[in-house]
Length: 245
Length: 327
Ligand SMILES: Nc1ncnc2c1ncn2[C@@H]1O[C@H](COP(=O)(O)OP(=O)(O)OP(=O)(O)O)[C@@H](O)[C@H]1O
Ligand SMILES: [Mg+2]
Image 1 (cartoon, each protein chain N blue to C red):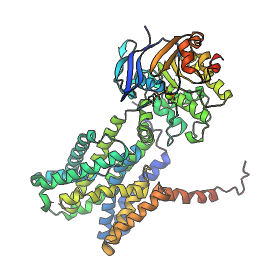
Image 2 (cartoon, rainbow over the protein chains, first blue to last red):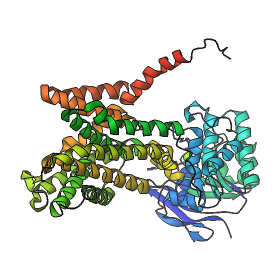
Image 3 (spheres, protein in one colour):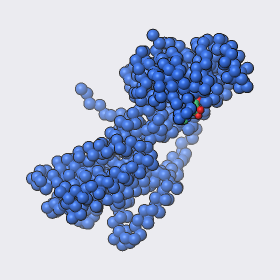
Image 4 (cartoon, rainbow over the protein chains, first blue to last red):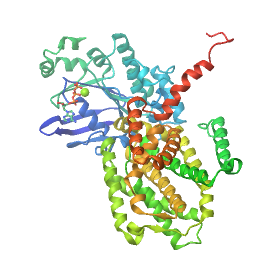
């Protein structure tokens, strides 16, 4: 059985079908990439899966149980957590406190005092020496690590990563990609990642789903997907060449 | 079960706190306070308690309420009614009853206030004013515009100093513990970004309801003590918008969201009010206005922020490398 599944999941904003009848499935231990042009509905899809937005139609299942309609904070406790495309640290809390808040909501999947678990997660993402800094003192890459750490501290089963690699320099992108792989391999978390940085998504993903205008237009291994005619069309003029990397 | 010293309370802070409370408790005898000062300090204790509790909502959760007079008035009238109905009952039980009803009222009213930021603030004005109107018209309960009189008890008024001190000490300790605990972390996360907080598992609705209820209950208890102090209460005053504004002003002047700020702000507020209201009744609101503008523009953390700013050069001076070689 798939770990997380969406069935005909849809979100309409007025007349706009931001997400239009999307079916997808995430298997345990998998990294699933989600790509698509700007405005394709990727972030909205995450909002529906994480409970930040109620769907207009369709449903989300976690291990076969319907979870759509439940608010985000409850889904976190059940093991579904998201990060934000534009990082959203709590600026009034220290790095350690930011992660501790999240560690309080592991829903019984983790043992030990929240603060200690927060420290462990910060070590894991490479922020072990910045625990007392305020988020504002971190670089963008640092804040992306913090965003990751906060999500990881909830001991998720499904991690939804919204453009974690984008926007940092190539060296940082490499280490963030390695970190995502480690999350799957060492922490045994299944990951869905939205990513514009093609080398990252293509090398990390076991499978890739392509969205365009809210619809799923293709699905398959990275190699299959880039050859798909509709995908080429959707990306035409958008630096499709980069997708071959 | 073994009792352990809670990690979040530094022993030095606990000692300083205890010393402060003891000093205040013996001050009337040691300093030989005049009845005037004795009473002024009693009122200050009640105001500090109210401001500290308001700050849980306004400062920690970041939801600025302009309607706390509703809980203050309700607590006062319930306590007064209890004392009138059962004069032999110990007054603290009546105050607690007032606090409980006020807390329940807050809990009941809060679902209509599940809004964020300015929308919440505006809605609290509505709830506060509605409460004032309803309780002014509900003469059977509040005595309407002629109010309620309690039997005058000057001994009680004298002893209220220590009751007020006790309430303030409890609320101050609670503020400190909340701020230092994981509860406080979650409140500050809600304040910073309610959606991001939900995305790491924090239920904003739950904590906002909880804190509004607790904050309302404490303000209700202080309303009960207030009723005992004055032996006469009147709905337009107890539920007055001025009073709601007072909680906001005290906390903002002192330093919103800090533990110490509301204490400082309430003291300054009570003193200013006492002196200005007597000598320059027209000036006094204007002065608060100026103070507020100054704070909002230059020092969002109010007097606490100012003190921190002043202490920094001092500390630097104190820590200056004299004999010790600096790294
Ligand atoms: N709250 C909202 N109200 C109205 N329209 C919205 C809302 N959120 C998103 N949209 C619209 O839905 C569409 C999909 O947006 P979404 O943010 O999901 O795209 P995306 O694939 O994440 O894009 P990007 O790659 O730029 O991040 C866009 O047209 C967007 O303008
Ligand atoms: Mg997006």
